[in-house]
Length: 620
Image (cartoon, rainbow, N blue to C red; front, side):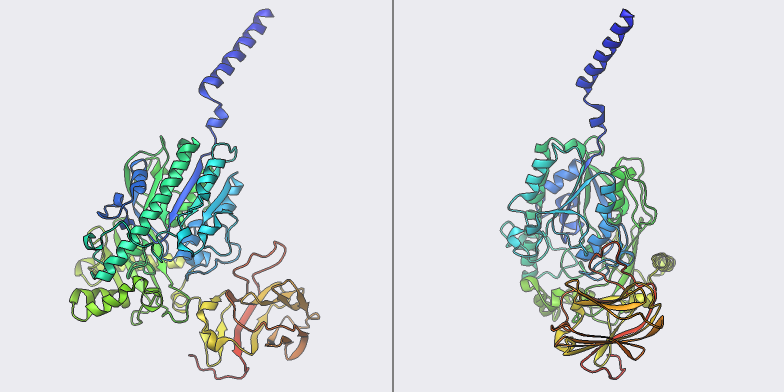
């Protein structure tokens, strides 16, 4: 008995000794922390480690030397909010609902925090969010997530650094930190580091003095982003958690230059993507595996120990990072549905990129001029005027200007042979079979997503008539789509025909000012302050709805030509404000879980008339 007791004590002593030597095995198996640093509007071509001879990016280059650099990483779209919505949802833009810039996702779309929190993670975002409604991130550093002042864009109060210092070393809970700076998004920083005359001009830009100065300012902003990245990396090193942290660097899309951002050209979609995890991911490695930014969320979930969500468009590429696989995707899909501004021309395109480097683009309004901020509003550094001037006498400048302004119906490029995509192969006899195959591949992909050509041609836009506009069920239109000098009424009329009025849901949300809803076979009006008004129980499940609202706040609601509500709101709710008019749902605000959102019945011809109900039916 004594020998047995001695043996047990000796065994316990050895076990404790092993724990002290090897460390706590439970701690050693802790889930990794994860940091994703996202720059804003930065092409893959604009980092030193990707071959740019001029731009100074020492910290990005060092990260690549310590991890894996992807050469074929593509955004799902080339605009800020839609790209980030795809990143954080794992869904392509049509499926998550954020297609036009600044657009909110559809109701009930799951985002990165929804997945990772269930896996035990603290999920934090620092700086810019630009996803609507805002996902359930813990948000820090909101001040440098604002568009202005630009002096805040590199987190001068060091909120991100201090968060890592205060939380990473001592946290029992694993952390996923997303760091989002506005850099190098316009307005660019004042150039101090670069000599415009010595810059190597990318082939897709017209070489003018103004363009060189703009490029130098863009590079200055990239260097500022690199400096911020360096501070974050140093904070992680100081925390002692470097070896237990997966660190990713990427950007949402390419820069605000012609034929880059807003487009489906390589310069707008091909982004940097670098991943480091010491002792897990091979140093200074390069992968040609084709990945999409929709793969980000599934990959983070995989690192967190989650199971695959099969309904997502994105797929984890962890096996590529660990060297178990060389390839990931055969094809990546991307799109642009441009901006909802009423002064834009709506010129959408859809595209597929293959792992072999063939890039097929379908343009849906090839005869319509392409217009963006570059040539219409901001004209950053005023370089675009110099393009138009040089194009008058320079054939190459005229070609580049035309390339930006007008697109053919279809385009095909071999990006491995033609980096700047200057040689359209769509009519090349050698590529006829490939073009046909890729066209069908794009059609099949759109079919999987559920987006028809008619939907693409229509977009998330109102159908305008002479004094009225129509919103289709399931569609939202941004306030930016309306010229407020014309569409702000003194008297507002909303008409529609309803089937299933006994079902619960939102019939129309008018720019967040009020909504018309159905509930328990009643129709109701809900104001933004939470005040609601309801009718008596309806006698019919289907019928014609007519709302009249004056700027004095006098509201009348009729159903099948019977007045079912009359309310004096004593306030003007007729004017358009920032937000959306939506048919059949509320798009940009989360509702309580017990409050139905999407209307399950049918809404026909929801029409908004301005000042007079009877108007010509002529489309504008």
